[in-house]
Image 1 (cartoon, helix red, strand yellow):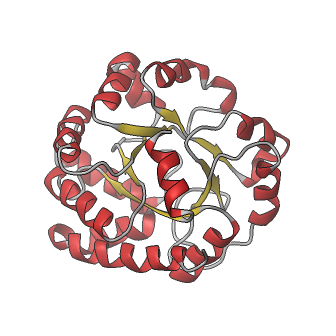
Image 2 (image 1 turned 90 degrees about the vertical axis):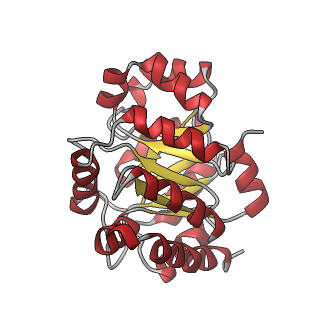
Image 3 (image 1 turned 45 degrees about the vertical axis):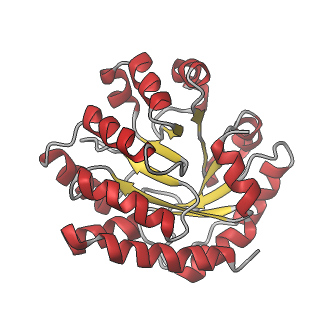
Amino acid sequence: MNKIAEVFAKEKKVFIPFITAGDPSLEITEEMIYAMEKAGAGIIEIGIPFSDPVAEGPVIQAADLRALQAGCKTDKIFAMLKKVRQNTQVPLVFLTYINPIFTYGCDKFFKNCQECGISGVIVPDVPFEEKGEIAQYCKQYDVNLISLIAPTSEQRIKMIAKEAAGYIYLVSSLGVTGVRTTITTDITAIVEQIRQVTKVPIAVGFGIATPEQANKMAAISDGAIVGSAIVKIVEESGTNCVKPVADYVRVMTAAVKACI
């Protein structure tokens, strides 16, 4: 059983925070990983900064730009995560795009993922039908390729779910990442379709920001994912972001756990 499966089996409901590596610095990224784990995060998603993150809204786009301008590079992220692995075994998942992987070199990228204990990768701009280009490396280096299922997936939902690994990232809303006041998608209906073909855990993301939203989404699924709301805290707090991020993660984790 891999680390992701172990966390869902043990925790039942999992809160998954997202941060952008290198924003405001890699040293603080490392501190945030430890703090978020202590605050209750079961899995942590880490964005590799990229100049054209097509799935991201303005908050995460700005974080990517800040990290790149500060000199954050993929090699430096791997070096930081090797230090992290000496201190914690919390499951880590990369969110990146196909261009940075190809530019870095697929074999080298996934080999380094394995060496740093990266449990999974999310690559939003690789459609299900084209995932074979990286799936072979994921299998070789024991890295779960996390599937995205969106409200627009429709007849493809079961097809994608059948081959899912790690957990399924269920996109709650159309458009790019970002905080939303309401989530109107019928998440229950999509979850029911997924459950018909797989037991792989489902975590809902995109638009979640409040404890009430996290509780509602986790009650329907197996967990909640929050990115933009956390990245916004980092933007507002700068180098003093570790404590406010940890405080937020603690509240959101409690909200997710409350529906067990």
